[in-house]
Image (cartoon, rainbow, N blue to C red; front, side, top):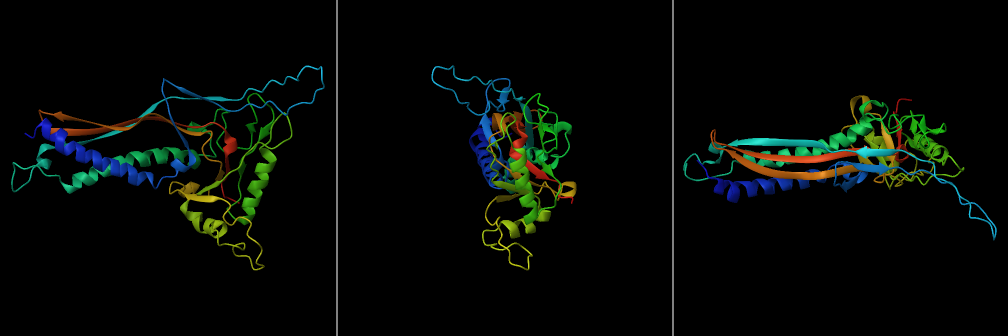
Length: 312
């Protein structure tokens, strides 16, 4: 039987190399790295406190006490580690050369398998992050700390407040729909103690393949005029947002589109990045290559995501 020495000095390093290539290749093509802040975490949990509001500074005169204005308490989200993993099994016979059984060789299919299973780890994280947007209009398992869906008409502005805001429209994507969404942000993203706009500046437009053409015709830096407009009206959205297409926005979510302020309260927590171990089953002649990660995904504040179902 092929020895542990051969596994450690020959097979495992090459599998590790192919696995690393798989991670690097997949990481170039995922949206979550542009949308979510990645945080390396220690401890059993990680708390993310969203900002309360203290209001504007108040005037006072010489000899008076500086005005006190206690911040309103907002929501705190607790992230806890969830595990993802996969192992692959390789029989000792897969490492032997058919013509010269004493020689060890690496089956090309096995090398592609090493790359593929690490790529799938990255794509699994991508799917889990994109599921937040696929399910953005239904609370369900991905409800925010205020118990509402990510995009809803009745988010409380701060915890225990009767004042609410809406980060949702239903309009299909177009130049006019972008204007409607920006007006929505200007109207709704306001502080509850004072009438001023919270600093919300979306830079990314997330969409699926079905509306990719319309998005590109509107956002392309060379699109100087509004698409499909006979009067050659100026396109004010040329180059304004970074379009990101995700294949997970399909079927019922095919028309969905979002303006997003990335990072911030969109957090991907890592307790353990993907890692390798390997071991041998001497009895049956199998090698096992195993990878695991510990993670959690949090969207703590709905003000960073403004979405449309694209139905009207």
